[in-house]
Image (tube, rainbow, N blue to C red):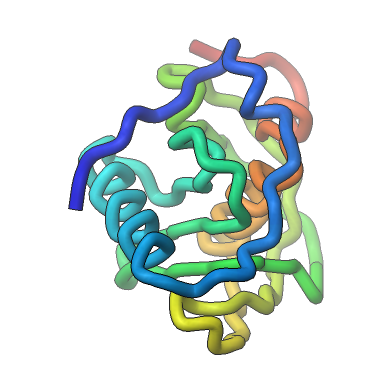
Length: 150
Protein backbone atom coordinates (compact mmCIF):
# COMPACT_ATOMS: atom_id res chain seq x y z
CA UNK A 1 0.00 0.00 0.00
CA UNK A 2 1.09 3.55 -0.60
CA UNK A 3 -0.10 7.03 0.22
CA UNK A 4 -1.25 8.97 -2.80
CA UNK A 5 -1.42 12.74 -3.20
CA UNK A 6 -4.91 14.18 -2.84
CA UNK A 7 -5.84 16.50 -5.70
CA UNK A 8 -7.09 19.86 -4.44
CA UNK A 9 -9.47 22.50 -5.74
CA UNK A 10 -7.99 24.26 -8.74
CA UNK A 11 -7.00 21.05 -10.52
CA UNK A 12 -9.26 20.62 -13.57
CA UNK A 13 -9.36 16.82 -13.15
CA UNK A 14 -11.88 17.27 -10.32
CA UNK A 15 -14.47 18.43 -12.88
CA UNK A 16 -14.01 15.50 -15.29
CA UNK A 17 -16.23 12.42 -15.56
CA UNK A 18 -14.67 9.16 -14.47
CA UNK A 19 -14.63 6.06 -16.68
CA UNK A 20 -16.33 2.75 -15.98
CA UNK A 21 -13.99 0.08 -14.60
CA UNK A 22 -13.84 -2.93 -16.90
CA UNK A 23 -10.70 -4.71 -15.66
CA UNK A 24 -10.85 -6.23 -12.19
CA UNK A 25 -7.20 -7.00 -11.62
CA UNK A 26 -4.29 -6.49 -9.24
CA UNK A 27 -3.89 -2.87 -10.35
CA UNK A 28 -7.48 -2.13 -9.28
CA UNK A 29 -6.93 -3.86 -5.93
CA UNK A 30 -3.74 -1.84 -5.42
CA UNK A 31 -5.60 1.39 -6.22
CA UNK A 32 -8.33 0.54 -3.70
CA UNK A 33 -5.78 -0.34 -1.00
CA UNK A 34 -3.87 2.90 -1.66
CA UNK A 35 -7.08 4.93 -1.57
CA UNK A 36 -8.06 3.43 1.79
CA UNK A 37 -4.63 4.18 3.25
CA UNK A 38 -4.73 7.73 1.85
CA UNK A 39 -8.26 8.35 3.19
CA UNK A 40 -7.38 7.09 6.68
CA UNK A 41 -4.13 9.09 6.72
CA UNK A 42 -6.12 12.26 5.88
CA UNK A 43 -8.81 11.48 8.50
CA UNK A 44 -11.50 11.34 5.83
CA UNK A 45 -14.67 9.26 5.62
CA UNK A 46 -14.61 8.87 1.85
CA UNK A 47 -12.39 9.20 -1.19
CA UNK A 48 -13.01 8.92 -4.94
CA UNK A 49 -10.29 7.80 -7.37
CA UNK A 50 -10.45 11.15 -9.16
CA UNK A 51 -9.24 12.74 -5.92
CA UNK A 52 -5.97 10.86 -6.32
CA UNK A 53 -5.78 11.72 -10.02
CA UNK A 54 -7.32 8.53 -11.45
CA UNK A 55 -10.41 8.90 -13.66
CA UNK A 56 -11.99 5.56 -12.76
CA UNK A 57 -15.33 4.92 -11.07
CA UNK A 58 -13.89 3.80 -7.74
CA UNK A 59 -14.90 5.02 -4.29
CA UNK A 60 -13.90 4.03 -0.76
CA UNK A 61 -15.92 4.97 2.33
CA UNK A 62 -15.58 4.32 6.05
CA UNK A 63 -17.84 6.21 8.45
CA UNK A 64 -16.56 4.16 11.38
CA UNK A 65 -18.30 0.89 10.49
CA UNK A 66 -15.45 -0.59 8.43
CA UNK A 67 -14.29 0.08 4.88
CA UNK A 68 -16.60 -0.13 1.88
CA UNK A 69 -15.25 -0.44 -1.65
CA UNK A 70 -17.52 0.68 -4.46
CA UNK A 71 -16.56 0.12 -8.07
CA UNK A 72 -18.90 1.51 -10.75
CA UNK A 73 -21.37 2.70 -8.08
CA UNK A 74 -24.83 3.91 -8.96
CA UNK A 75 -27.49 5.39 -6.68
CA UNK A 76 -30.70 3.41 -7.28
CA UNK A 77 -32.93 4.97 -4.60
CA UNK A 78 -33.16 8.36 -2.88
CA UNK A 79 -35.54 9.12 -0.01
CA UNK A 80 -36.14 12.11 2.22
CA UNK A 81 -33.91 15.11 2.80
CA UNK A 82 -31.19 16.13 5.24
CA UNK A 83 -29.28 19.35 5.74
CA UNK A 84 -25.91 18.88 7.40
CA UNK A 85 -22.41 20.31 7.29
CA UNK A 86 -20.13 18.72 4.72
CA UNK A 87 -16.47 19.03 3.81
CA UNK A 88 -14.07 17.48 1.33
CA UNK A 89 -10.47 16.27 1.38
CA UNK A 90 -9.95 18.15 -1.91
CA UNK A 91 -11.07 21.41 -0.29
CA UNK A 92 -9.22 21.33 3.04
CA UNK A 93 -10.69 23.59 5.69
CA UNK A 94 -13.84 24.40 3.68
CA UNK A 95 -17.30 23.40 4.93
CA UNK A 96 -20.89 24.13 4.09
CA UNK A 97 -24.41 22.92 4.82
CA UNK A 98 -25.64 20.73 1.97
CA UNK A 99 -29.00 19.31 1.01
CA UNK A 100 -28.78 15.55 0.44
CA UNK A 101 -31.17 12.60 0.56
CA UNK A 102 -31.78 11.18 4.05
CA UNK A 103 -31.52 7.63 2.73
CA UNK A 104 -29.96 6.15 -0.41
CA UNK A 105 -29.46 2.74 -1.91
CA UNK A 106 -26.35 2.11 -4.00
CA UNK A 107 -25.54 -0.70 -6.39
CA UNK A 108 -21.80 -1.25 -6.91
CA UNK A 109 -19.21 -3.88 -7.68
CA UNK A 110 -16.40 -4.94 -5.38
CA UNK A 111 -12.72 -5.24 -6.41
CA UNK A 112 -13.49 -8.67 -7.92
CA UNK A 113 -16.46 -7.49 -10.00
CA UNK A 114 -19.17 -8.97 -7.78
CA UNK A 115 -22.30 -6.80 -7.54
CA UNK A 116 -23.58 -5.75 -4.13
CA UNK A 117 -26.19 -3.37 -2.73
CA UNK A 118 -25.61 -0.90 0.11
CA UNK A 119 -28.18 1.14 1.99
CA UNK A 120 -27.16 4.25 3.87
CA UNK A 121 -28.88 6.83 6.03
CA UNK A 122 -27.64 10.10 7.51
CA UNK A 123 -23.81 10.34 7.30
CA UNK A 124 -23.50 7.18 5.20
CA UNK A 125 -26.06 8.53 2.70
CA UNK A 126 -24.17 11.84 2.52
CA UNK A 127 -20.88 10.02 2.00
CA UNK A 128 -22.34 7.88 -0.81
CA UNK A 129 -23.78 10.95 -2.56
CA UNK A 130 -20.63 13.05 -2.05
CA UNK A 131 -18.22 10.44 -3.40
CA UNK A 132 -20.42 9.32 -6.30
CA UNK A 133 -20.82 13.00 -7.28
CA UNK A 134 -17.01 13.16 -7.59
CA UNK A 135 -17.21 10.47 -10.30
CA UNK A 136 -19.35 12.86 -12.36
CA UNK A 137 -17.06 15.84 -11.77
CA UNK A 138 -19.42 17.43 -9.22
CA UNK A 139 -18.11 18.94 -5.98
CA UNK A 140 -20.11 19.26 -2.76
CA UNK A 141 -20.00 23.04 -3.17
CA UNK A 142 -22.76 22.76 -5.78
CA UNK A 143 -25.07 21.42 -3.04
CA UNK A 144 -24.21 24.05 -0.42
CA UNK A 145 -27.04 26.24 0.80
CA UNK A 146 -25.85 29.54 2.16
CA UNK A 147 -22.17 30.36 2.49
CA UNK A 148 -19.12 28.16 2.25
CA UNK A 149 -17.13 28.45 5.48
CA UNK A 150 -13.42 28.20 6.18
